[in-house]
Length: 216
Image 1: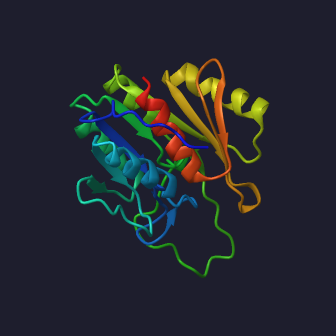
Image 2: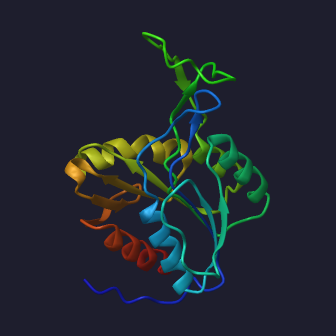
């Protein structure tokens, strides 16, 4: 499918978060996830092609943003991303795309020094983390907000059902629901009322999202 792109994104201030976040276990070990940050990078670079003013908050990923015009700030830990958001959201963004795979849990009590590797068993108690997308909406209530929902198995019914709570709680304008089941990417773009489009590649999602944002 070929998307006819208008250039209404020119000079729009856009923030894109991407990549995984780390949660400390001790001063050596972390909890993380397998996010590559690839989709967020594709979206940021497509926005740059539209002459948007793009800022990226990037977690610990292997690949790096190629465009020198994109302002990139790096983080590793959940608390570092939260601090970046608290500082940046004092300024108003036109669009915020929160693609970072933020850790849902943290240790109730993390260890200050390296845990001995000779232990026979080790129990870690986890508690829920703060939802950073809620912070984003509170700080920038007028921004056009795109949230992400990773789902193990996805179809139209599941995508809408699993996204409903995020629409309600974070007041997202759009959600990208996606899945990596069996290492095969599937994703859809949806608003509160309907699924807008389905795609089997990250590139398809990125280009369709830019086309849709250009119409807003």
